[in-house]
Image (cartoon, rainbow, N blue to C red; front, top):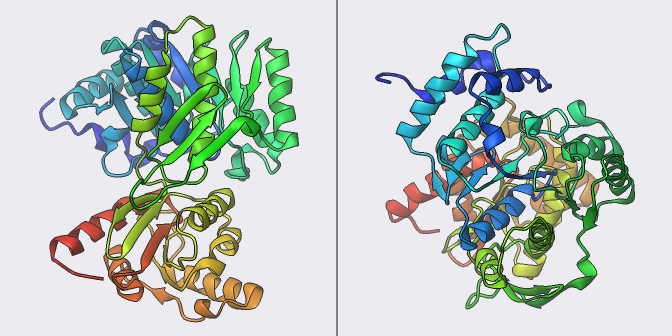
Length: 441
């Protein structure tokens, strides 16, 4: 163990190529004794909201008394966030031990697994070792060929909201992308879905019918918003179907809807014999946390971070701002990846802003800040007639961007950082450093 860095091993550049398929993961897990066969799963796919659905379900199941595992991606602050048992990150010692086991198995293979395949194996081996009662397993990319899809017969498959993302790998239509994500549906296992666009829902329905899987679709006509967040009560109060008096601290306007999808999954689990009392449901929804998704991380000025990274996410952010902070025109601190549809993302948020600061996320796929600023000027001025878009600030670093955005907003204003989950950690660290130095907006 001495001198071995598990994160460095898993993240080695030579493992980072994206190669779809399940063969390597299956072989790797077989060499590890098939730990997945000793576990029960809730398997969650989707484009937007799947992480929040996972967070709700894990916390509800934990409140019901089960020992839970949670596997998600990407992480915000530290690698260990991706693998949690009963809400606690895997320890560095446990991560080292299990990664050494996986490394030995992987290096005996003729075709070495990819980065995400290694992480999946590490997570599943750890959850089995920790004797988890049930694991909430988030798909990494797509579904059908994602390495998490090596599991057999989940207790329930869940498909969160589907949008156009990763089109080069998953297809250029909602139907094609939905078909890939519906690949997690297994024979005779119940499936729960967000009420998708017609072509996406048709693809899910077809897959469910082929697999003899009962499909439940969240019915938002039965979701009642009782109270929106306020300064004195920063939570949504809502009810869904027979679940009355619910509340969530996740502030995005879409979060009660993600919670409704999770509640449908709870009902499916009950149908499979899992004991999940109503009190556990209320407590789990109320106490669920999911950092970096329309999260207030600072005051004076109010500082919001949001991991929206595609047009659907940007529109959801705009809707949340208008509902939770009506009439406020924030300073936007934006960093995006070059392979995202950032022009359409900008169309959704530029009309709401008072000023714009551009940063370059710490990622090899990042769009340089000066190119993003050019897109803000063109999209804002030429397409939307946005006078505030004339002179976006090009930041030298995330720290420079945070400082400039706070200065532009003033102590009574608001900053919203969005565009990529990969920039959120940098932004929050820079904000904490400024706050620690006593710098006021």
